[in-house]
Image (tube, rainbow, N blue to C red):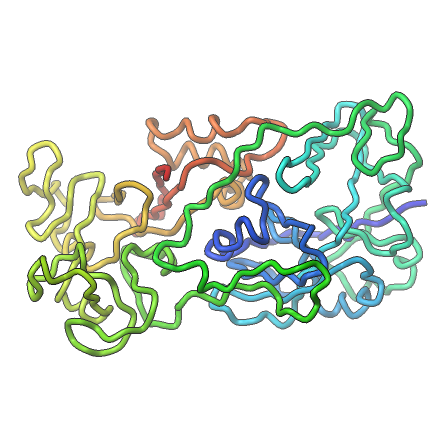
Length: 445
């Protein structure tokens, strides 16, 4: 007896969750310990917002790092009636538009593909998720399969009966990889749910997890995201999906390519501007440079995007080469204005008319090629793996990070047998507008 993995012939792109969505649902949909789907939510449908999906024709895949499957509707039409013990949800893009060709799906009871001696097993102490770094040839244990025909273990599997009833030539992006089904494990381990085999050792151990702390969504009240977890079995409620953050406003900045959620002092709504009276996306003026308003009158006042770009108010910025103020670039050591050779003075004006990055500590804007770099957003360890050309996330982190900040990765990488999944810092990414180089820095809350 075998079961078949629905393996992608060519994984053209990882499917990446939208960072704002991931931070918003951490602790409700995603576990704060292992940052994976909390399966105790079953049978609630789980909707996701993605920032990258790759080919719109891929048949079945999963969302990187969080353990939620993505299935194309043409394959769902064939498998749908056999998805017992699965819950389905919707897929949205970063702007909140539904991607109609795909659905999410997750199993209430995922299986574990086992290995040989030397394999390890650990359990997240917060949600109970099993982590199994496998060694040796893969196989599945019979007692896990039950009466279903479709299974999930990160990837998706079908049994022999169902595999023989589908014309797989219609799904050319997939190949069926056979996994033998065995009665007893070869790893010498007894996992939760296993029979009480003799001489199989103790169930899995709990690693020393640190609770993953999200940097949060700045200037957005989480209660406005309407994230709720209701009682299991409540099928009448709507899928769990935070509404998209306000992206419809035509705001563009040379030095800021991150999301609205990363803009320090963003008011979060379309309100009347305190300077021009027109409605639009606005920023708090409390700490802004605003000659039209005395400093003691700026509290509670807001200024719109158009007034920012026109220079009616501006922002001071901390950078690695000094403080950008209304008086120019101020050297940290001398407190005097200066400008590095070859650095354009127009860049100072452009940066002052750019929102500040919402950081835990002091903002430090990075530079390269005699110019300020463009802020890209917050990265987690998984983003380094996804962006590294050779998949070596640690090497990319070290390349992007100055020596005095390089300890973050190894300080958090407790289990070297699997990729780093979380850390205690918030990492801010910048990109050079001239050569494309990536750099970053980090802080803690």
